[in-house]
Length: 196
Image (tube, rainbow, N blue to C red; front, side, top):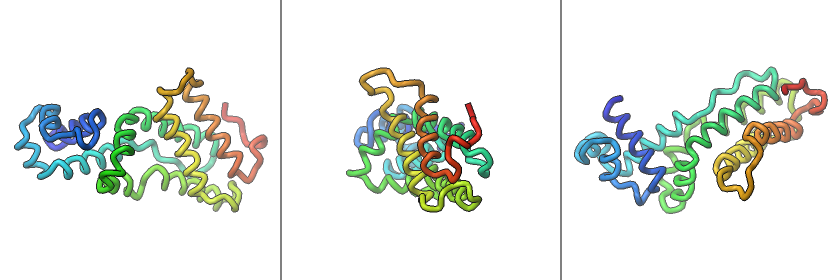
């Protein structure tokens, strides 16, 4: 691992634990096993390092890409599992970023402005379903993508804090995907091929 990558990974770990204000250059340097001068030599400022670290974490935390639509239920279930795994693995970091965005909106572009983000990818998939006549024309692809991503993200962030033991993630994700498919598919869900 090169020094830049080492610093980025350390910054993500420290940020996930302490948030923006608690992420000091001293803590990052200690976590990376370097001195602060090295940190400043590579990034110049704490803000530049945090932005670069969050952008890198967002890039590495993407689920597997969706294929061209042929079997929506199977493809979306696999995508939902992949999204959940990424969101759940980075849940503390996501919570910190969401909490810090109000006071530090400048960090948003580092993690929100990627053109290939999960929402855009999923909206594109729903648009292709619509183009192929597999999805209803009256459901905006962006809305279907937002509903599914929102449900998956919410479950990943709060699963550990629910008052009682939730069903296994696979069960919950299947319900989310099935509900969205029931809303958008041109063929009634009962007539879709079984994927279980």
